[in-house]
Image (cartoon, rainbow, N blue to C red):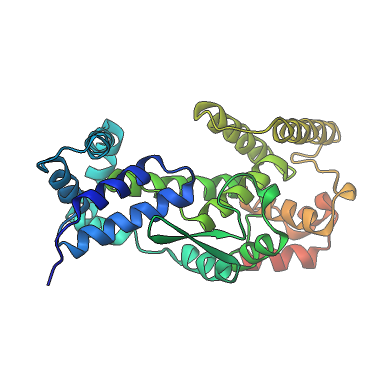
Length: 308
């Protein structure tokens, strides 16, 4: 049995999903829209049309309907949605597949659950991670950072960090092509914030890592991602150190030079993994990689086996 759609309430939730003050509010509102439409036996798109055709037009509902349709008909969204429909056979099947938690999402969701704080707003509850709903990793509690890192290991190389960052963005863009008001969950935003730290500050262990950092800079520029001045300063300092380190090592005859004596044990481990991940150095003997980084051949061997 289905319930009648409360057009007035649905319109108010629409407005919040489109222009909520925080990402958490927008995410919760979108979930609420899905639930209200489903209870009425409709899709969200059908419910939006029902609101738009109500006898008493609501300016907020009409604005939300236009916004929804504009985002749905955006050429990039249309192309993504078409690819997903071709892949899964229908839009409904695509929605079911891509909105299901990935293994990484399931692990992160479970890891942050003890830190979730709920508050009431407009008739339902919105969660945050001990008050954190988005922003930089510097404002995340240390306990949450540890939980996220333990739930799913952080990338050990700059290239690996960029790869995961792009995977999250692609998944979000796929979801938004079907649900235009989709917003990442708080634990996903927290993971991405930690990836940005990797991309900003992890020492490049290879030329490929350095190119990945430059690719990241291009993404920030092209997408007009807001950054604090202090973040940019740290970013440039890391890039400058990368250039100096690789240039000085190149003069000594090493293809992927690294001054590992200045690195922590975890830093040396990251550099070994970077060399094992690079096509140009992965074929080197364990002993040669160990010599370049300043670790034992046994350590390299263990990391090589673990990476397979």
